Length: 557
Image (cartoon, rainbow, N blue to C red; front, side, top):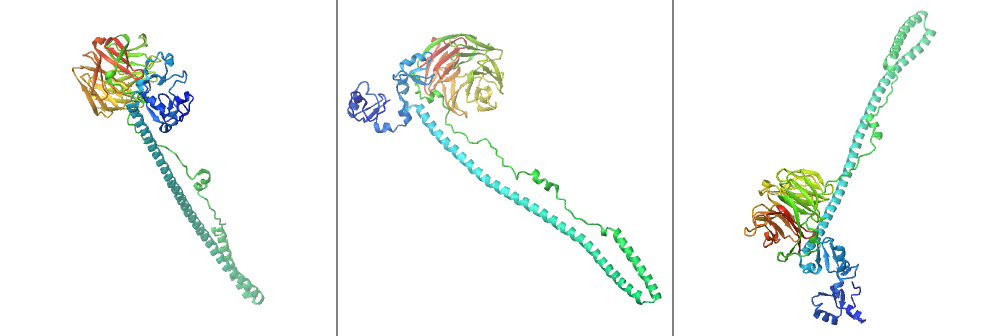
């Protein structure tokens, strides 16, 4: 990539310095006014698009830094490898000998600015921005709710404290009142006794004073008789004093307080006024996705016109099976075939030789790759979907369903399968919940596949139907003069639909909008009651299997 946009690259090679006015991305250099004219009429460059230097400089830095030549070989990119998702120069081809998806890069970039893929990316960017904004709004709302909750909790803490204080104040007041009442009661009893004793003391003192006078001035008889009276009086007072000392009136009165043990335990047991807890509920925010996109669409491969499709036979395969109902190409180029009548599944290597077989798992109908080196196999009437580990070469799990299960597809952690009388159903691998996609009654020989936000299914009648995930029919193709008893269905990177005609012994491709069709293969190509097919989007390969013995692998361009 040139670094000086201001200087004409052609003139600079001639050691002439002229300001550039336009930039040619094809030539990767700037052009002055004069060179621009030559560039526009030259046979080699007249088809090149140019842009003014001012506009070119406004491109994002990451775009300006994209090199159009191979960093290893310093040669112009001429090919694109869909398997490794990278551009290649001619010298890079040596390291991509095993790659089937090498395509002329000029074909790929043709009309790329008006392609569906570019439009998909543009809309995806818009969706991402919108989802970020919605997610930010969601989080800001959470911040506000936390702040509001904090204020509520603060008020609750203070109110609790007020209630506790009020209650303790009341208990304290009640106890003090009780203390005052008890103290007053006991004090009153003692004071009453003291008053009585005081009177007795005064009386006795008076007697003492009288007794001294009597001794001095009274006659003997008067003294004797008075003494007898005083003696009786003293005996009565002694008895009174004795009665007081033996009664509870002279008990030592003590008052005390036993604080409620529950209150006494508060300092030890109540270490916290309360506790602040944090819990979280699953976010009710859902990412809005207009459409699920496959990786090959996102790298901007242009839409294929079905009239321009070419099939090249790559390999004939002897399956040695009868009743082949399903087939699939694996990421490592191995092939899988299910035999409904032989009750087994076979995996073949890329050269067609046997890798391993799985027997005794009951009927085997549809087969689909689910990632993590595993495949899933439906079983027709046995109401279970079996999971096969390709490394362990054994069945690892069986998922029970509540219906017949025929043709099957896999998407985002869900199996979508034909459930005969129950229509098309979908089961989650996460919690194995089952939902109905549609309730259209299907035969036991129905097949289904997916592409983006669409489903395509056949029903062993003479039609293929395209619908969305709510079961709303978008289009239906039916032409008995072209196809009879449609079987397996698959879709390429551009949404073109490939269908097997069992009785008509052909393979037909239908355009993504369901408006056009074209026969690709027939009995002249060896098809003999074909039943299964699979289009591999990573390699642009089509695997077609007759119901017995033979299968065909095609490269699609």
